[in-house]
Every structure is written in structure tokens, then in C-alpha cells.
Image 1 (cartoon, rainbow, N blue to C red):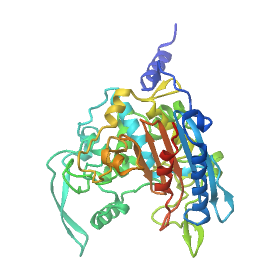
Image 2 (cartoon, rainbow, N blue to C red):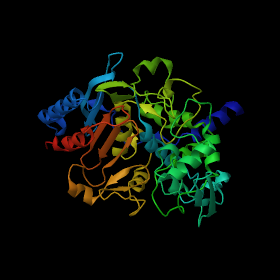
Image 3 (tube, rainbow, N blue to C red):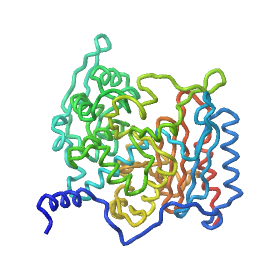
Image 4 (cartoon, rainbow, N blue to C red):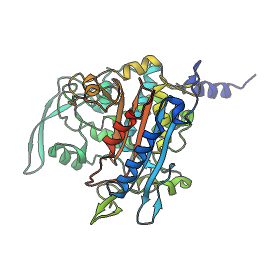
Length: 429
């Protein structure tokens, strides 16, 4: 007979895992000939030439591109340099700061807990993080002494609002409103990522005290809502956010190269963030953040909105799980029915992009986007990251496209639209 302690540990182990064995068993991503899945090798070769030319023309210092169809990788190539100063060539397993591509992973974690019945999407966040109770809206702001007044919001911020960037929260340094940039800076809000000794709990609780752009639900304003949800995951699950992602998503999917802070043995694969100055690619300097955050500092701030680093192959694995309706290699991360909800327009006409709607984790190509051409089928989901990374996945065509670059500052990079357009043009069935 097992000891009570052993049984208790086993109980907590079992209930802590939303992912379960599935009756479906889609294989992990593997390499295939293009013709086997209805893709034109000649047209894929043209994509390689386009990316090679972009490096030669100094649009980008380097890039890793991956294309998959029907669960098979038909294009996975590296071009240019991971770091020009040290003459380090780009490799297919180079690790990139994926910034806002983190958001879809955090949203997935939220929905895993939702599937367990831990909360309702329209619950007020203050039910779990009391500091958000009775939100206030910015009413007036004085540029003379950086003081402001507020008025009560008409309603509470919900979990759905945080997932859809309709909460009224802002984004500090990258906010489009100068008033909020100053308010967040003065309050000591941590934006995006940091090497400093800060927890997501402390930053989120500071954020909760600040005014909102608008009444929750009234508008779409890109925000730190997913950082709030990173801490929310800790509260609801009882696990540190990084450990939750590791045990519940990354390990089950085999995403061994996806981390907030890289283990020492992976650090030499991290690409440099580069900018072009006087016609040469140089490492981007320390600004309000240190670009070496994935491998130095306190390593305590787990940004649910922007903190992860990953590879093209790992992120393609994550997207393939979605194309498989929540399952990969016999492990179910989310239910098909949950994914159907995630992929519905959640913001109505608030998103402001005529070609796309916004769901619970991704931008979604709509009928107008299909008619525009080059965006993919209706329901294609996509997003990108602060350091010039992009992805899309088309459930109808079962196509994934990932473009990993790492730049800041002004660039004349046309690879984003060319790559996507040329991927769909390479379908040959």
C-alpha cells in the first residue's frame, strides 16, 4: 500500500496537468519532400533566393525561415549572419528573442486553466488580483508637473479584456500616448523584459494602481494585459509562471529551446539584435532594456507579453499543435472546441485592421484579407515580435510560415510581405 504522502503527491501531480493523452496522435514535425505535400520545390527555391537577396542588399543581417505543410517541414533554411561583428553565421537552430510571439503562448496557458474550470473568461481580474478592483480612467494630465486626475471606469477589467487588449491598460515605453509613457515610467512599471531583480507580481500590482486609456471593453489598445495574465496564471495554478509553461506546454510539446532565460549551454546560440549604421550591421546598444536579458541579470521577470526566446522549429511545433486542433504526438494541450472559441473574432470592429480580426490569442485573417490576396485563407492566424519576427498558420491549407530575424531601428526590410505572399503561391496541389 502506498504511503499517504506518496498518494498526496501523486494527486497533486495529476491534477496539475491539463494536458492529457489523446485518442488522436499527430506525429511531431518532420522533414518531407515538397512534392509529397503539394508544394512546388521550384517556387520554394525562389523564396530562398528572395531571402538571400535581402541579406545581400542589407535589408536584414540574417534570417531563419521555416515552412511546413500538412505537418511536414518542406523549407527550413538559414541565411546571413547571427552576428556580423564576430562573423557568426546564422544556423537553423539559432535562438531568437520572440518578444510578442510570447503572447499566444501565455494565452494558451490561460485557456488550459480555463478548461479546468478555474475561472470564467468574463470574471473580473480583481477576483484573483484584488489590486485591480475599482479601475480608474485618465481624465486630465498636466505636462507642467506630470500630475493627472482620474474618473471611475464604468466596469471592471475581465480576463477576456486582458486577452484581447481591450482592458484599457497601456504599454509604457512603446505606448502610443506620451502621457501613459510618462505615467508608467514614473510608477516604475517594467515593460517587455528586464535584467533587473523584479518579479511579475510586483510590476503587475504597480500597474493595477494606474489609470486606464478607456473603459474596459470600449476600444483596442495594445497593452501589458498578457503580463498581467502571466501573474494571474501563478495565482490560479499555484506555480511560478516559467515552471507552468515548462511543465505544461514546452516539455509535452518537445519545445526544448524555448525559455525566458537561456540555460548556459544554449546561450551561444542566441542571435544578436542588430541595427544598421553607416551601411554596416552593428549590435544594438542598451536602451531602456539590455538586449542580453535572456542570458544575464537576475532572471526573475517572466514577461507573459514579450519575454520568451525560441527557435523557428520550436515555434512551428507550437503552431502545429493549433493546426491539429490542440493535439500533437498523442498529447492534448487544448480541446478542439476551445480552439474554435480562440479563433473567433472577440473584438468585433475594435481591432481596426480591415484585413484581420482579433481572437483570444492571434490576429485572424477575415474575408477582406482573403480578397486582398497574399494573407492566406479566412481564419489564418498570425502575429509577430518586437525584434522583427513573424509567423502565420493557415488551418484550411495546413500551412505554417515562420520568419525569424533580429533587428531594431529603421530598416528597409520587405521580407515579411514577400515571404508570406510567396509561401501561398508555392502551393502546388
